[in-house]
Picture 1 (tube, rainbow, N blue to C red):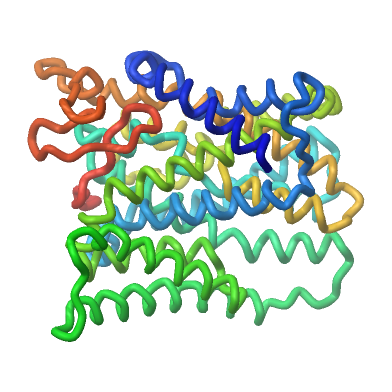
Picture 2 (cartoon, rainbow, N blue to C red; picture 1 turned 90 degrees about the horizontal axis):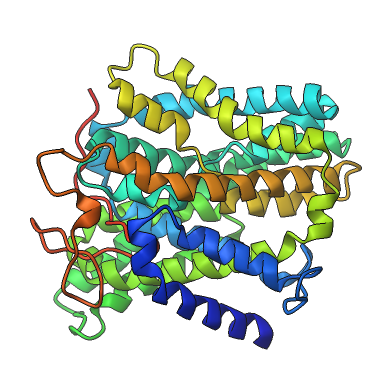
Length: 428
């Protein structure tokens, strides 16, 4: 544990020192931590001796995903979801099952996996992660409906795909009881906890009996998130739906709490994300990559370059998105922490193809992180008004962070991008 902490501290310091350069180029902080983990891991320098079964791997992945979904949920409220649901609804109702199905086809015909395992792999790789497309989601010159589409889709699909992972995993294990009632309860309980806990906490703080001091106000939303996390774990509720629902509930009923938590919360989520990337990178040793056949590499490339573009092209037929918006949405389907968590679940399941599936999941995520986190800024710049100063060139006076000249808000330091605005434009 001490070696992981020291390695993370050193890489974090290096990332801070080059963050200004990363802001101006395609250099990605996410890719930096991934590559650092690889170089520090087994088979290279052996500084970090980690394996997929190490408790820190699954724990950090779950915490990072929970924190990211919680803070992402705070960018929207229930009113925003109701008024602009058409585009996320298309992505989730059509794009998600199409992504799962096309990935399963590739897994069966390119890799040769049996259909149950192919469908399982498709479910594991179906969720998207907004973390590695931060420049697009956080650029205020990008149309609001596109930002909200990507934010809501990635916040909800992590939880929605879990039942499919469990069902196909049960089929692969030859189980006759798929526990559908338990899965439904997990999802419903996650939403209930994610709504009830923040609502009750905010109402208590707003009552005449309680009041948070200025110094402790940023900790209010943090305490809410920790209660949601602990309660969801204790009741086996779906962590990811609980996290996103909790963030949305805070945004809806506690704008003051959300504002107080903004900078602190995004920094905390950023730290967890980067730590998880470092640990994940340490799992991808040269020997691990050498075990992947050329068919596996081909599958990973097709899963990124073909599956989502085809799925969303079909899902957004006659959606009235502009060509540039649709191309951006089709490309930005990065794989992230949800797939890591589900991949570890498969690896520890004991099914015959578990190791192969985890290798395919891991290499797809690695290529996704490198590709999406290095192209997000480039695509986001295409939405800048040529007559105005490009948003990525604007610099702010505080702690080296960028500030929007219109509202003075800071942003998280992950790759120099600004956070998404409060109210996104409604979908057509």
